[in-house]
Length: 78
Image 1 (cartoon, rainbow, N blue to C red):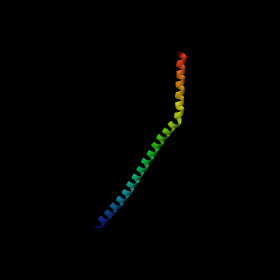
Image 2: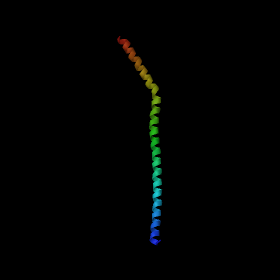
Image 3: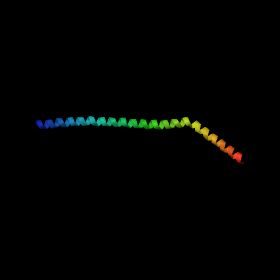
Image 4: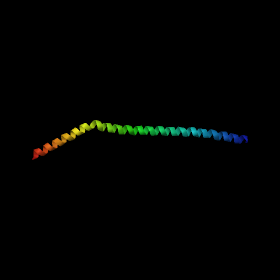
């Protein structure tokens, strides 16, 4: 093997190692991004469900009040 071939081989190996490091870094970034995206949507959906659970008794009370008011109005007009 000539010195030029050895140098090309060494250069190829170093480029392959550098590419491998970059690919691993990109894959790690992708995994972190996917996890953060999942966490983001879980937070949004969880807060919406939590808000519904907290507000539901008030909504039920308003609906019940409206129903009783509506029935009182019907009895009043008759």
